[in-house]
Each structure stands twice: as C-alpha cells, then as structure tokens.
Length: 499
Ligand code: G3P
Image (cartoon, rainbow, N blue to C red; front, top):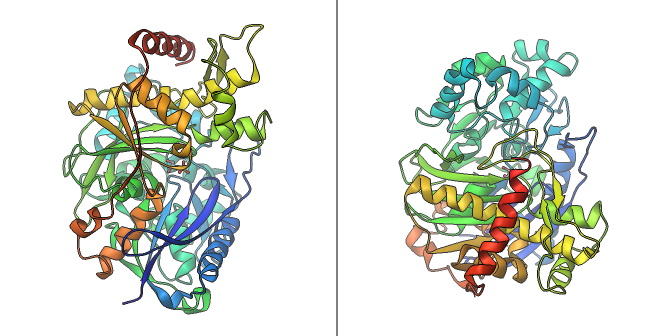
C-alpha cells in the first residue's frame, strides 16, 4: 500500500493540494489563487480551465516538494466549492461558458419569478415542494438557476442541450472528468444535494424541478456515495493510475474531517463564507428557522444528513478589507488592528455583499456599515468586519439549536480565518461557550482524504481515524454578561436594517 493520500481542495479563491499520512499529518501542500471575474455588480465567475490548470499545477507542486510522484499516492479525494456551475460540450470537453460561482446573484430575478417571495401565497406550494424534496430554500445560490441561465443565454446552448451534447457539473464533477481524461461524469450525494434539482430523500434527480427549470436530464452526472470508487486518474495526466475514491462538497468534507460522525456533532468553517453544519444522522431534519437540510458524507455509503447554516460572506469580508478598501496588506494583519482598539466603538459591518443567507434569506440585501462617528478609525472598521463573522455564526447557531433541540456545549471550528485568535476569542465571548480549534485546521481537505482512504482500505474504519483528532487551541468565554448584551444588541439593530 502506498504511503499517502492526496486531497484536492478546490475552493472559491484558491486551489490546493495536500498530502496526508495515516495519522492525518500534512506531509506536503501547495496552493494557488486564481482569478475572480466580476463582469457586472453582483455577478461572479471563474474560468473553468483555470480552475483545472491551477488544481493540476498544485498537485504537481505538492508532490515535487517532497520528491514524490503519483505512484506514492494510495488514493485521491476531491473536495470543492459547492453549487458553482460548469457546463461543457460532451464532444470537445470544452466549457461553453465561465463557471457561474455560488456567490453570483444574476439569477435572483428568475428565482423570484418562479418561487415568489416569502409571503407570496400563490407560490407557497412550489416553495414548500423545493424544501421538502431538496431540503433547500429557493435561492440564486444553488446550481439550478445557474444552469438554466447558461442554457437561456449562451448562443447555441439550448440546441446542444436538447441534442444531449452538453454536460453539467459542479466543480468536483469537472475535476473528476478532467482527471479521468474525460471518461467519468459523476458526482456525490453532498454536491448533488446543492443543485436544487436532487431529491435528497429518494436519492434521484427530481423531474418536476428539471421541467420547471427546463434542464434536460441527459446533462446531469451520475450520483454516488461520497466514499467509494469514482474512477482512476489518467496516467498521462498525473503520471499514474490512482483511484479517485472520495468526493464531498467542502462543508460536508470538513464535517467528516472534524470526525463529526455522530448525530448532534457539529463544526463551523470560516472560509470564503462561513458554514455551520450539524450531523443529523439518517434523519433529514426539516428546518423551521431558516437553515438548510443537506446530505452529509458517510463512511459506509449510506445516506446521511445534516442541518446547515450558510453565511455567504466571512473570509471574503477580510479579503474585501485587503483588496477593495486596501486598509490592510494581508489577512493576518487584521488581528493586529482589531486588538489595537478596546472595542468596536459602536461600529457594525454587515457584509451582505451577496445577499443574506441563513437564517434570513434575503437575495436583495446588500452590505452596510453602521454606527460611524467622527472618531471611528480604520481599526474600528477592521474590528467590526472581523466581529461580523462571529455575529453571523451566532445567528445560525441559535437557529441550529432551535431546530435540533440540542444545545451545543462548544463550537468546533476550522478554515482559514479560524487561525485568527482575536476572532476565535470574540466568538467564544459572544456565544458564551468554548471554541475548539483542531491541531490541523485543514479539515476540509482532510475529510476528503479520509473518504478516499477509507474506500481503498488505507484506513480501516472511522475508529482508526478518530485517533487522529487533536485540539490545537481552546478559547474560553471571558466577556461580561453586560458587554455581551451590548454587542449582540448592536448587531441585531444593524442587521435588522437590511434583513
Ligand atoms: O457553498 C459554498 C461553499 O462550498 C464555499 O466554500 O470554502 O470556498 O468558502 P469556501
């Protein structure tokens, strides 16, 4: 048996490859950012060929750094930004349009036309149908309306689709197709459950929703369990034929990577967005508080479910400070500014740059900064931006507790921004509970490595994997009750202006 498992972690802003050993240690890693394309306000695209070239580039770098080749890899796992939609020509393998990214709002109007607003009586039945079958709340976030947009707006697309010549895939499917030299067109339960076209209870593509969006079934990939053989990498592409045996959307992958295998276990990932997921076992719990029901990855291939609170903008708000406002030079610098002031000075940033996700679901909301005074400084704005990640998490955590009836004793965290000690302490303070950061915060990649390795016998079972868990740092609440109330009231006031 080869010594390592390779994870391909294709995120919203960068492609990464990480090589793990049996103990879940990182042996090597490589990362590359790629272009974010904003053709119009609210629109977000990626170039699918750049997604592929950056991903395959970091695979090569990751292996080369430790003088290894694909022959040293026992299995490949893929994890990915979810919902992002790619359509390509089956005959040429060429994408017919850029990838429409999950954050893109171009189809908000179409969603409103088809599903009305929350209180639109005429559309209640179809809204509830979507919720019941797909577990989702109708929104431009999911793939369905993005596929429809491509078919309606790209010249010649409709004709090709009707002739069965187009394929759709989320990013996992695209990478799998490319890695296997164009021979496999498949996805896993977790990614399928984010399209708004998949019946998560019956585990099949939903004919009524396909009709509603006018999407031919021939475009859709085969759906498989997250842990199991999807295909083999093409030798000419990475130098060896390696089983690709684990696929999961990044948030479900992180849930698995944090070893939240049991009902009631949860994690919060601070990536581009922020996603709190709770494992609900084989029970698809329907939310009454603005959360999503989604499929979770399981070790044995059975259908697992989770409740999810999706916050669209988290780490992306820190990037906004760096790239658009240009008031920090790097993301880690935000911590220095945040701790240079005693508090937020009454400033609140609500980064609803792509509408509001859970638990509010307002496609048209946009970001605001409130509470500015003559004394508000750059440090206050930076601090308030960081705090907004914690406030948004607190909102979804409250909804999660109501839906599940389970009170979370602590919060397991991971993802890039979880490295920010100020943010983690503040999170603990406003939740008034422990925040636990693991030794390896790359749990997204680790989850897909586990799924792939379990399928080929690299790891025997989840018990063996659990031995790898280690807490890196624990944060304990240290804020007074009065201060907590003050900041939470301030946030509630700010968010109520746009929700
Ligand atoms: O649903 C979108 C999510 O999968 C994106 O994840 O890690 O790129 O923020 P990330």
